[in-house]
Amino acid sequence: MPLAHDIKRDIKAARKIRLPWSLLLCGIVAACLSAWLFDQFGHLNLTLPTLNCIGVLGFAIAVKWKLRQRAWFWGTMTILAALHVPLILIVPWLLAAAINSTLVAVENLTVGSTVRCRLRA
Image 1: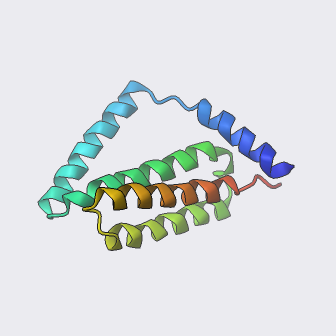
Image 2: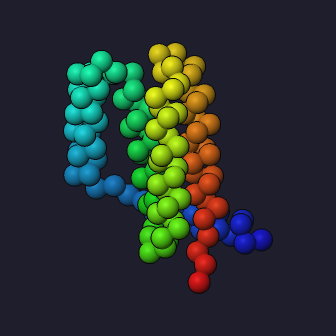
């Protein structure tokens, strides 16, 4: 089963990902700056969904890094990122239940669609 083999390979690649402390520090600073920026525009409630979507897309790209030379891969990532924008803007993020259920569903779909990208010669 090639799909099962691809999923196992992706899980192994995900387990090997280690972030250096400098990158984590930059991520914390970027999160604080984005929270400040969203607060300045009066939309502090959009900070968590935005950072979550950026993080999940970054993780999906890191797992599928072998596909970086394929144009269709970047097209797929661009489409997934573009689909996240209206979702972030339309969903009422004030409710904790909406945040949890919607983010889990969307991020599962994002990672699931990325897992289905296969390396083809």
